[in-house]
Amino acid sequence: LLTCLRDPDKVLRLSGRLRLIPGTTIHFPSYFSYLTPSLSFSTPSSSSSTTFYPCAPGMPTCLLCTCLGGSVYCDDLKLDSVPPLPKDTTHFYARYNRITKINKSDFASMNKLKRIDLTANEITTIDDKAFLGLPELEEVVIRENHITQLPALPETMTLIDASHNNIGTKGLHREAFKDMTGLLYLYLTDNHVDYVPVPLPDSLRSLHLQRNNIQMMHEDTFCNLKDFNYIRNALEDIRLDGNPINLSRTPQAYICLPRIPIGDLI
Image 1 (cartoon, one colour):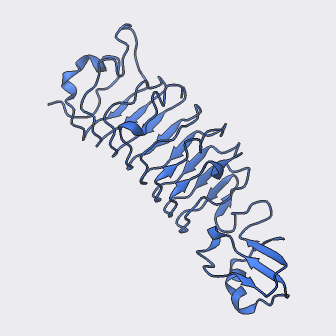
Image 2 (cartoon, one colour):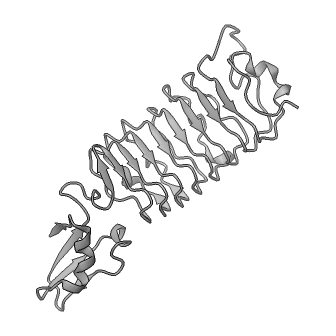
């Protein structure tokens, strides 16, 4: 039997007021433990059980979190895992929690999900296929975590922000962004990347790689040296400051750009 708790105060009163029928067990899901850290009631000879969820019917997280239309806000709730989400969720925010891992099953069959924001958790691992199979996904924000490997992402991406992590040379898939023809913003600030992750789609507007370990650049990193008519009008914002690279050594690398990248020229 699944029972939905609509009134959070009711949960906190259960331990003092609940009377159980012999043979009954009541459980609380682990993701609700921050409200009810030790609420589990049972009687001898348990033969039946009831599970209480912080939810409205069909939306098992919307009492624990705040649901507004297709957006689910689970910010600063001390969560240690992704809670089950309504299937019609389009935007999911779980910032400032204690989530340590993202599993493949966390977003399974979320066919309407467009944005995932997991800023400032304690994530060390993301299953490589956790975000694949999401046909509408456009924006992933996983900044301020402890990630060493950027997971595979669908070609529908428009914004990727994995700044302030521990992503190094081996933490990016080869040609990871090549087929993302709608990608606009790529932020990898404050990691351990030692190269510009080419090829980059022509759609890209902003590339932030400051405070990494990039030491060199090829002249065809941004431009097509075989076609001097090639212009990258969209890519107006490139940040390479804080890297041990002298941008003045590769002047031909910027001839197709509307602006010279920000970085050291000496």
